[in-house]
Amino acid sequence: MSDLPRKPEPVDSHDRAKGIPREWFSTTHWSTVLEAADHASTRSVEALERLCRAYWYPLYAHVRQRGTEVEEAQDLTQEFFARFLAKGYLDQVRPERGRFRNYLLTALNHFLADEWDRRKRQKRGGGTPPLRIDAQAGEDLMRFEPVDTASPDRLYERRWAVALLNQVLDHLSEEYERAGKGRLFRVLQTFLVGDVAEPSYAQAGLELGMSEGALRIAVHRLRRRYAELFRLHIAHTVSDPTDIDDEMRHLLTVLGR
Image (tube, rainbow, N blue to C red; front, side, top):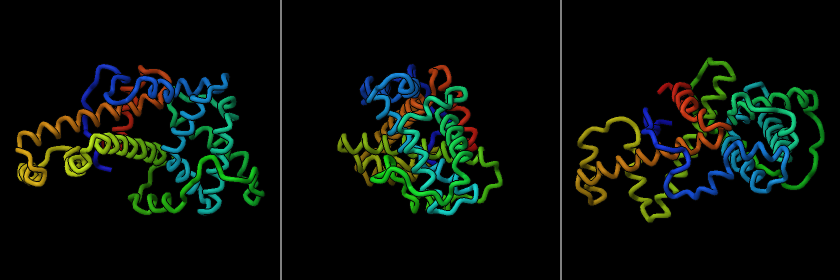
């Protein structure tokens, strides 16, 4: 994905992003999710489920990359989340350096080590899985990935970074839609990365009925908000706020930015 600012503009605090209730941030923070291991908190469980729904693809692709067929990878990934969301793994595994991505990968590898010899097992529990995996969507994403000889762990981190950026972009799109500015966002999102040639600004301005100066201001605001949301979403996946900047730098490095 190419929509990430190369150097996100800093914000004073990871929880001051405009338009998001402070309560939403506090209940989706990874440190709150960890508390679900010891305290029966419905909000923490819901936060964990949201995080899992957002980042299932890197885990599914990791299972597939280990030589697992599509149907079995789907089954294994759903079973992993069924156990994870039931909080069993919160008691067994601890995140390395507080990163949710490392926590999930470690938990998945533990799960696969236990389950690999049960490939033909009967499906347990019945009913609707707590997190439905869209295997076709996962296969489509893998098909468009460039050929890469990086290690499985490095590929997982890159897929995690892309998944996070997609979440940020979706979040930003939803904000503009709620404000009745969906068309503005669809035109301006092409300006999120790097410098765009002057004629492109002029052309977009004509399409939107805006002066070039007004368009540049709108692009600046879009980039600033994107940077704020990028920081906010990262804050949800680390247990210590002091890790946010380091995680931002790491993910940008993984993406080659």
